Length: 214
Ligand code: BG6
Ligand code: MG
Image 1 (tube, protein in one colour):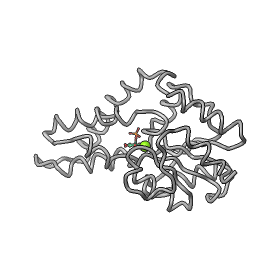
Image 2 (cartoon, rainbow, N blue to C red):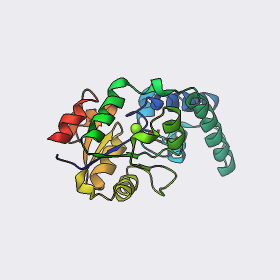
Image 3 (cartoon, rainbow, N blue to C red):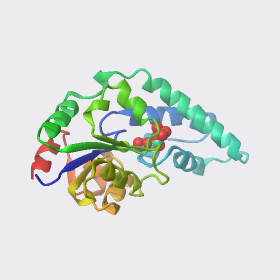
């Protein structure tokens, strides 16, 4: 065993909620007359809801927006997003994801979530994944989101493991930076594979097991 624990990002790694984030932001961006593509959305991966809005507003050219108005936009986006989450079921978790989680746990690895999302508990509940993890570190427990290492260090602490014994699984560039800043190796999946900065690139989720075994 190369590692004692595996810390999983949630959106875009275990479930494809990254698509729902995009669609909800897109609705808001359209309303504000801001161009917003799936490529723009990649910059929002791993970063908090508030920081995401600030990134989207970089292209805003209208009247100044007050802090209260920003708060309303955040709520509006989250309401749209939560409606999509409300339709999720256990079938939204791919078979290879559920099987790999079980295989890792049966082999003795501790498993945790390390996500910037404040909707983590709701997503885990909808998809019946809550019991698959020994600890959950999420956006409700941190003051700085990725690329800051806080969420991953918190996960290691909750698991009582040294950061160097943890492997992180991420789809976000900000998450790769956060994992390394925490002193953890990282396996990238999807978007995060393109930078070449991760310690491993996953073509398929199930490759994770062999990586952990070394
Ligand atoms: C991360 C997503 O997991 O959670 C980001 O990659 C998102 O795109 C962040 O902004 C915060 O999510 P939420 O659910 O708290 O709005
Ligand atoms: Mg992600």
